[in-house]
Length: 165
Image (cartoon, rainbow, N blue to C red; front, side, top):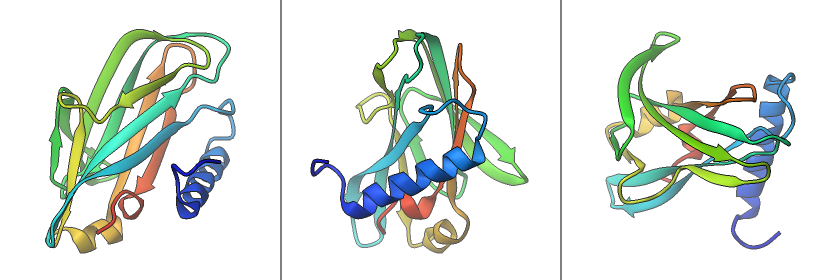
């Protein structure tokens, strides 16, 4: 099992996976994005985090490229590296849509960093005193992941699971 994740984090991953399976019964098993965060800085009134998204091709065929769309509520300050950025509405709520794509093949069993924590390619977001209660009440991050030969992977996580304010 290792020591990379705490027992609470492992339970959260398991629960997220089972919820995803239940919400997407037609999706082949194993199509899943690992969406988590890394702490960048913590001050008394501002916490900054980086969103990290990983994927492993669990199918028996290679993907000929991929595209990801990440949706973060507009009330959460976001800084991004080399990603396309749009303001959109989802179910009447305002979001920042961040999009990236690659034409690289993803071979069976190959893990990739879809949104890594690098100098030029990143998603950094902030939880502060001004948005903290709103993040707890209504904040969620959503995503869509597209490949050439698999169903779209859609998911979401409440912002309460993507911060430690």
